Length: 215
Image (cartoon, rainbow, N blue to C red; front, side):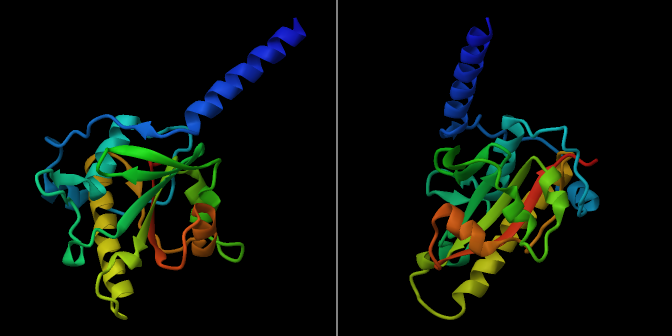
């Protein structure tokens, strides 16, 4: 009996790992309805205490990611977040307890990157860390691909930071309008994130937003 139970548990764990280690197709984002913008602005605030017993549903995550940087004009691929010269250099990496995913805005899906809980890299470094990030079920890390700028100049990182700020504000307003808690942050282990995701120096981890329900 013990051998049977052990085998059963091993099979379940293998199946679970297979599911977690693959790409995830998100539900179609709900693009209509919701709170008025003026009311969302009135409710918007930074929150640093998260209920670690509550997760964010796939539907709500889909709505959040679309609001942050999804396609709102399919005919020409334009997105909810403006970028300098329409470079579209801001990528969103989704850090969860199960793994890290890249938001595919064209397919509205999560592309599997790395298995495991790496939210500590979002929380900070060994010398400075804000552990409340670990209580948020999802952290959205905004990474700027500086190499996508056609004109190479010293202003590109500054423009990328501005573009990332717009995405972060989209996240902040969506959370305010949908009963979620978040806080925009710049602190994180940028070098560790680049190493984890196998990104070179042309990728700039700009900002992050831990997201969940308020404690």
